[in-house]
Image (cartoon, rainbow, N blue to C red; front, side):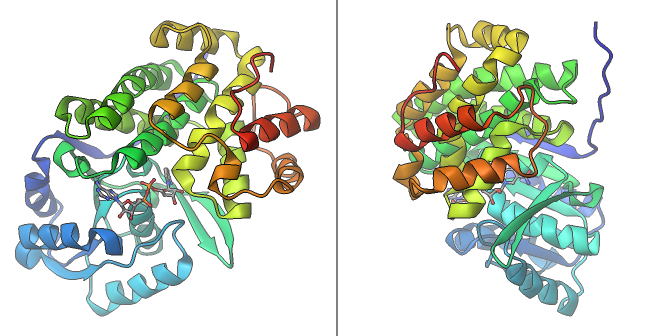
Length: 355
Ligand code: NAD
């Protein structure tokens, strides 16, 4: 047995169907009386339902959350927090809404009650990515980690099938990278393998029948595990590539993850034979990287970076960006191999089996 370190994150998780009803009791347990409910404009109606549920505990509703957590939106919400003497944050939505809640929490140390409605997994991490002047920066702080997370399967039923597929593969990426992270450990790996197994089965089922409650529940359970993985270990090449091309070309987050994951795994495969063997065993396939590529097709995700707006001459720029300031990775970063990886990903080809 190899030596390891495992840092568990604190936090209270409530999981099930109709669990949103437990939100008032959780707010009371934390003694919160002047809550700010946060959502995107698209989920303003859901925010209103949460407001009605919490009644007099709500002081304000802010529905301006945006993708990539722009700091000007945070400043706007911070003014509301101060003016209304807010004592707690309630975020209902995906990673964008949770990002705003985290950005407020790191500035104010207010407690957060988070109700995720996608599979992105942000709710389980002490990580915040925020954008200022067109540059997205990531930071980690214990204040960023939500105190309470309520997973309600019912709230994910409205997530469109396409978004469910890419959001779920975004989650799988957290689990896959956790298996070969520099600080990987047996506990996180148990969660990661279980997550890969349940999500890769549930996502195609959801795309076939978005009303399949069983599949929705399994996907949300898998997403919780994936977020927990990302919250306890570091990231590697896959996340570095996504952050680089996503930031450079303003690409949609979960689609970028979905396209790049099979290629990043194929790149690392020669350096991680034991991880590949574990993935083969849980997925029941010979080539896990190819399987993840096929999973993208099964959920009708775009196959190539060119399909989501990356220009072809961006490949060389993205390779430079990945090589300057790299994340730790099990296989050394090689310019030619990375150029080949990004060229294949750009064209929408399957991962290179010989990588
Ligand atoms: P998102 O939060 O941007 O949501 C996409 C759209 O779907 C939004 O308009 C949202 O309102 C809507 N939506 C969400 N749930 C819905 C539902 N159930 N029904 C109908 N519509 C719904 O998307 P996302 O992929 O969850 O989040 C992406 C963001 O999260 C990125 O900025 C990414 O960087 C961040 N993220 C952060 C971490 C972290 O640990 N810090 C982890 C993963 C993702």
